[in-house]
Image (cartoon, rainbow over all chains, first blue to last red; front, side, top):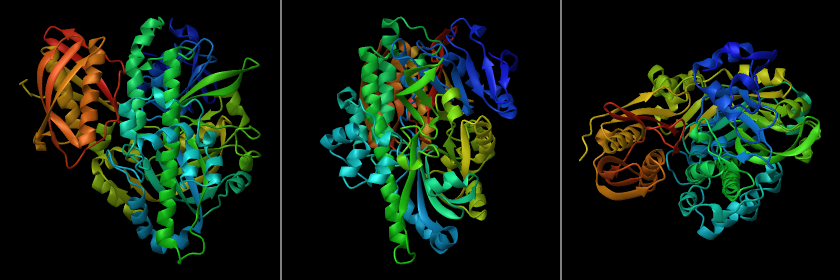
Length: 483
Length: 138
């Protein structure tokens, strides 16, 4: 097991394990953290998992973990690797089961005081319009044929179906659709699971939150994103549901034989992978891209649900009840992006497992409306605590393949959280603190207690300090819907 | 019918659920893992089996077989809103499994398991039989 002494401190926020630490490492491994987060890193297996990712064939530069990192399966959560597609691999374990889990931010034109008289009604309407919970059906049920179109087209499909506005699509990472999606590479079981869940939150750490913009740090970026103090906004956090889990599950199993076939040596079976250029690797990418598109549509349909709830409760009571999409980011994904390595521009397969893309000002993939300031980076805090909106900075391209943190990051197991926190008490405490709560399972609610997570402000201070992404605004919760 | 003593324990994992499971043979190990998984999903004592399913699986090795077995139960359970709580393991070899699993409807779930992972998965033979640790993504 690696210890603190095995790391070299490169700068205030950068810690590195050299490549010669273990024979099977192909590149060094870097941890981005302030001293406090670094010191806390050794309580679970996340450092070992980070080192394991540095053994993947074709990895360039260094394996990395962002400040919200913690133990996952295979990859650490908060892990990012860049892999040369000519010689390297793609790993379903490096994306995770909830493919394109991500966050969407919608902004209203209303101040907190304007919705205050209707807050409980609004929460009820949102709870009804955005179904959550275990195995629950979504807002839409699609036919087999429609599903194929949805998987191939992503947000464009939603647009055609009247489930999106043009601006929503423009303000989504990859415009809500990645190319290369191939439904023929998806199992019938995954498709079956996908038919009924379009527009559903799911459970676990997924949520829908009603927030208020509590503080603006960067007036120019906030202005570009359409954010201002006291404004009411909505955050949606979820992914590709049973469809994505099944795609990952299918390929984690089927690629086990590819590992042998291509003579790849892995320290953990969950890192299972195949050469990007092999039939197995291409098949996985084709199926994963379908799940990426499914998740973009899922959040899009939920956004329409949130709009419906706002209209139902607020129409005739306020001047403008509309919700405008600020942005939507993925945080479990593998995709091809251009990056500069050793002064040379090259295409890389970037795996982000619990990490957010954070492109800088001027980058062509940042929507036109935001290009001058940079890409919005959405960082939800733990349940009941602050969330942050950040903006991507040039340094991120140099240090982290344009990646930033995705949340607070857990520090405590679910069992321990459950033993320390009683779900009903936590709910009462939050409600006494002015946060409206709608939750399906009290056990699930207690497992997401804020004490089980790192302090998101430490995480955000680290990425701000590293100049990967800068703080734009802080959001405080007014109401929480937990699946 | 395999003896259903709880031969598993939940162990610490930061984000997900990890179970350590024992069995005097592979059949018992697989049954105990399935029962352990069910206990994470719901209060197993409250489930009265009303349906049974025959499950037959083949895999390249025993670890894949274990993941296939648990994934199959998750899938069958999710689509019918049931949890399997009784397992009649008719045959479990290193690469092949035949079993009858009995499930009942569940009113309240504790948690949702997204998937059964291969995270450091290894089935180890001990003096007393077999043991393994399974990590579930939740």
